[in-house]
Amino acid sequence: MTTETAPSNAPMAALAARAADRYPDDLAAKYLRDGAWQELTYAGLWEQVRQLAHGLIGLGVESGDRVAILCNTRVEFSIADLAASSTGAIVVPVYPSNSPDECEWVVGDSGAKVIICENAAQVAKIDQVRSGLPALEHVIVIDGAVDGATSWADALAAGADGDDVELARRADEAQPDDACLIIYTSGTTGRPKGVVLTNEGFAAGRRSAVEMALFGPGDVVYLYLPMAHVFAQLIHADCVEVGATIAYWGGDTTQIVPELGQVHPSVLPSVPRIFEKVYALAMGMVPPGQEEHVAQAIQLGLKVRAADRRGEPVSDEERAAFEQADGEMFALVRGIFGGKVHLAISGAAPIAPEILEFFFAAGVPVFEGWGMTETTSIGTLNLPAEHKFGTIGKAVAGADIRIAEDGEIEMAGPMLLKEYWNNPDATADTMTDDGYLRTGDLGSIDDEGYVTITGRKKDIIITAGGKNLTPANLEGDLRRSRWVSQAVMFGDRKPFPVALITLDPDEIVAWAKEQGLPTDVAELADRPEVRDLIQADLDEANARYAQVGQIKKFKILDRDFSLEEGELTPSLKLKRNVVYDKYADDFEGLYQK
Image 1 (cartoon, rainbow, N blue to C red):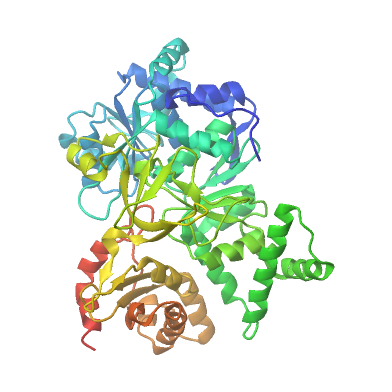
Image 2: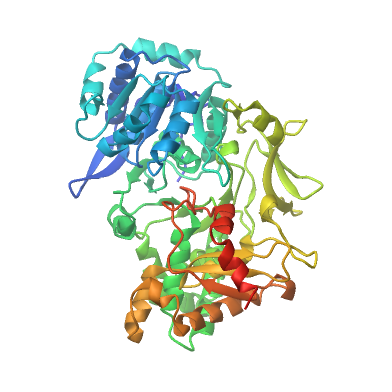
């Protein structure tokens, strides 16, 4: 669906007020309260935003001050985010999973004057480290009442009678190059760096969304991604720009699929894991001996749907076979996502082309895109009318992408970061002399302009034989297995690659019950029957690669990697160096057997 209004170059400070003028009666939000879905129009959203913005001004917030938000993805995060932006302040999201020490670093390094916390537990983290936060003057709590913190209701009430002329003045004074957001990269090494993003960068992202007709008024975007991550921040800004509805998840990962069935989203931004799990589930339901039939159905689905998009005819025989496959399998897949998804965007990590082909055939078009925190989450994207599975798409409008001599992808454009906060050395290191960002990704660009990523520069494995291997692709192929949650390839300066594998607890436990085996994941990790399952899927994955790049040995761990243990980033990317260090003995043990 497209929007009838032209994209704006407005600063983030003007975004909420502008949306209220353009779409006052359109739904801005759907959110769960006490088990029921509530609705909020753009006019209603603005009323709460302006009240909180005036409340923040009453606490002394000036343009350029930092306002931190320590909260899960929910409608109050959006209100807080837009309110802080409306004052001309710089928003500093903090991952709700952060430890007190990590919160201290983000809030302290940014010099936040105010922090908005979700609940008493998050306030308690700040209280633990308050002595190390000299710039922090005020704490606001969304849920409940906490001693020493201003309640959400009181903060809104304090700004109810504020004069919106002041908000308009601040928006008018905001410049394109002014910072509007500092995202602290979750990082795989060291302290997170504060990536300073600008009004100009977000305007470029919003323009791209409109020009590519990704979504518009009437679309419902289901948002479960953490709003402390730049991907969710950009989706949020795009929705407000075009007047789409955000349906906020309820906060429970086990309820994502049921909630999709309740809100029937038309747009689903996601990390690959949700698609990988549904794909593995669907493939796991294929009866023995029917694999070739399913593969043919997928190829037919690809052909028919591509023809339908181009307005080209297909034969009656093909149409009948397609409709049969649709009724037997594809409609069920669409139902898992609520039945109305016309665009799903996968980002933050690689996803296998076979998975994208499967969902396209099923009528849930999942398109891979690429961006970084440092590029305001945009860079390339595949589109319904112009895509090539296995690539990350073409450069979006305004992005200039090139390949350096060593194969590194470099990018220029208005969406690039302004700087790393308080870190000029890191800023200088990441930029070329002519203004391109060194992305750290390795890749290529084909004759049609499609970009392919081949790996991370810092993740390259050089075997003892001198062969350069990029582990991400083989790891991604292993994650397609119904039984595998994570796979980590190792082999730098070693004779051959090995891997640590974690089990998908939902799938492996369900299988174990069917087999009459124990249902404890730690116990299953040592069972020969489970090892045989993994070996079969590893053999299939290995077959796609040259002998030198194949995983020769593996170990199944007794638990999955987790955010809490520091092995995953908040966007569920693997912290490879952490895993390498923590499980060094396990990796080395694979070479002793």
